[in-house]
Amino acid sequence: MERQFHGKIIIELPFKLLTGTHIGNENDGFAIGGVNKVVIRDAVTRLPIVPGSTLKGKLRSIVEALEGMEKRQPLEQGKWYNRGHSERYRHEADTREEALKHAVDRTFGTTGKSGADTNHPARLAVSDAQVTPKTAEVLSELEGDFPFTEIKSENFLDRITSAADPRSLERVPAGSVFVSRLTYTVENLDQVRDDLRFVLAALEWLEDDYIGGNGSRGYGRVKFGQAPRLPMDTIDSLPIRVTVKPRRAYLEDTAVEAQEYASVQALKEALKGPLLQALSR
Image (tube, rainbow, N blue to C red; front, top):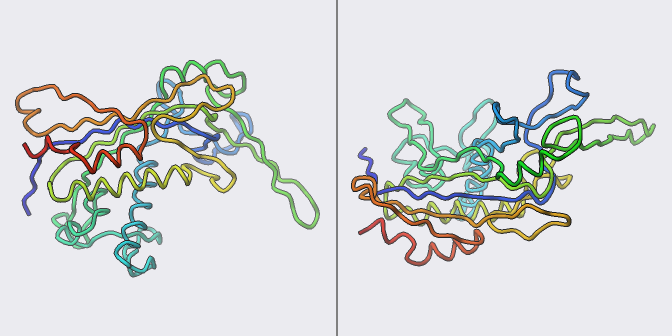
């Protein structure tokens, strides 16, 4: 099946942590201070990062649910959630032809059921989110056993004996600002608005949800774009920047100016207007 390339939509996506956030894994022991779970860091700078796979996986799961509900599909194993990977089910089209009917498959990609020729490559790429220079400066001044982060101690209490089971988690402090980059490849002019409508709805949903672990305990709340300052906050948040680059911009080496939006809601409104007109010229 033919693929066409009309251009790319590049979204520089900053977000502020409204609460302490943990994205990481179990330690392999207590060699680094007895912390049960540590955060993921950049291998060179040792600064904390939010992996692109974490953000993309969260967005995909939200889009799956939103689109399934919109299409009145049962969100059940073997129905809308039709494919299993290591006993974990999600929605995934079996063929490329079927994938083109659903925003979640078109946007995030699918692995075909019968071979590589039935795969549908993802239109959306999500980069690792790095901290801003100001965030790195502020985090470098923290005093503790771990650079750039805080340690959160918790207790699990036995309901009968009141025996405590203490544990410690490493978190990125509230107020930290990260910037990720979402790059959407425009393959079909008739589908781009619908695909982005679901992506932006998922970002808005995520602001009322959480990213990373222990979200039910209040971890991982985020705000995309410009966010209000927290108490004692010295780190400025940033606007969302969107660059719409038509194919000719690459062929003719012409500069394209980015547009700035204060919030996901503002970008959603812009999507209803002339934001994408450059792609069809």
